[in-house]
Image (cartoon, rainbow, N blue to C red; front, side, top):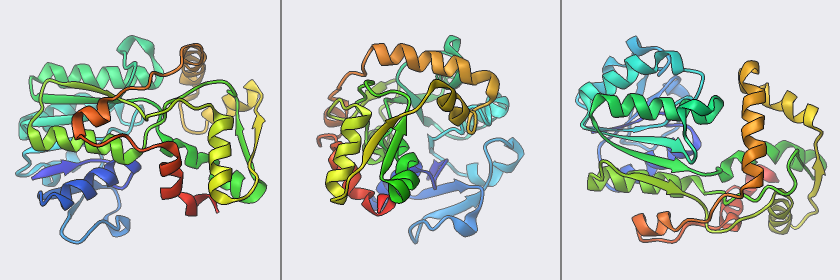
Length: 276
């Protein structure tokens, strides 16, 4: 039995689908089972990583865990939850981030913190450190549908964004083959700026999509809607630094799975309905 947390999110859902297709017993941890809409045969269990007392049923008989963590939101519960996972399972695959560093603060600091907690348990573990998620570009969907606009603060930040199915595929391979002790840094196969990604979406839609640069104040206000305000400036400083150092294009997806990483154009095709 493999437990997948964050099972209704982009990567978690892809991991559930891939494990289920491989014929593996899969249990999905969700906060609202009635809205999970997961494949028949997948066991759905209610639980919340921010509440360790809610996890007993989800962890019963578990062999391994695909851990998608609610970054920052549940960090206070992390020591207890990680200990629970390590006591019940023999292998934890943790979805982390390239640049994870506990000293960095904000999101990268949270990932570094979780990595340390997992390592300290001594459980067999694999860290899948992802670069930029192509799925984050769904944040543009509403403005594209209503205005034909993509708004971002950075116009020249080149990112090698990765399809959620490729992130999941690396983690699933680690689970199925018992690849413990590994750290896999994963990216998409091409380096693109926001205006370039907007043009690819426009091509797929057959409709114009223009790029508008946000002010720094607008960027700060947007980030504050999903991140604690005291972390926003730290996070934005980190983004400024990463903008000066474009993400690499890595071959890890192909090396681990035997299949090339999906292009951004392929990701857009898979999500075209969201942008229409």
